Amino acid sequence: MSQLQGKNVIITGATRGIGRGIALKMAAEGANVAFTFSASKEAAESLESELKIFGVKAKGYQSDAADFKAAHDMVGEVIKEFGSVDVLINNAGITKDNLLMRMSEEDYDKVIQVNLKSVFNMTKAVIKPMMSQRKGSIVNMSSVVGVKGNAGQANYAASKAGIIGFTKSVALELGSRNIRCNAIAPGFIETEMTAVLDENTVNEWRKSIPLKRGGTPEDVANACVFLASDNSAYITGQTLNVDGGMLT
Image 1 (cartoon, rainbow, N blue to C red):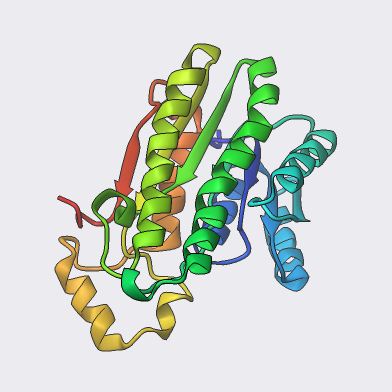
Image 2 (cartoon, rainbow, N blue to C red):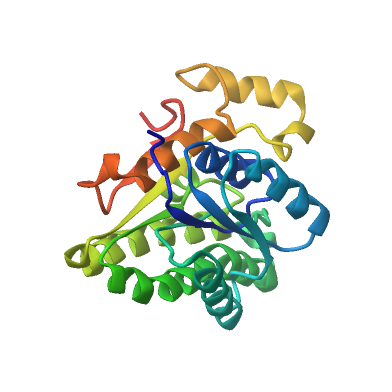
């Protein structure tokens, strides 16, 4: 039997990269998938079609997870359409990299808003329905940068470290209601975003990783499926590094 058969999953920011990989893997494991997207309706419709090939229900919602009301409205619509929310994957995120001395207040605030506030908004929106059904799994996408920091990414590191602290607190608050909350900290994952980087730079990064390769969206998706499924029923408040050994 598929690991997520019949579960209803919400994924934020799912039309490309890691989010898209997670959506496809969840559908392959039998989950019905509701996902958010910000701009491209074409990409959303394409993903919907791909997900439905697995025989599951799938629907994209143009919604800004960083907006409190929009997040709550979206979750309400999903519950009407799908009946329940069993799993939330907080994946939406952006970068606006710069050295701190050159970083604008706007770029700092925007990254915190999209990466960290969205996690608060979406989690707050799903906890009442999950408490009513006395079960649920929340998976928050952090980063190795949130664990160890990175020059030129003070805003991103702060947002991703904040996610880890938020995850641990939610796990402590909701454990008695059988709601689990864990984080995943991906390392260097090769997506369309990294494809534009200089090949020599990418090769240097690969060499520095103990497994000698960059990760794939599927590597992260596999960890997501595990934490979303009943196979991880006794795991909460943890951060799983999916990084090929970078932080070892």
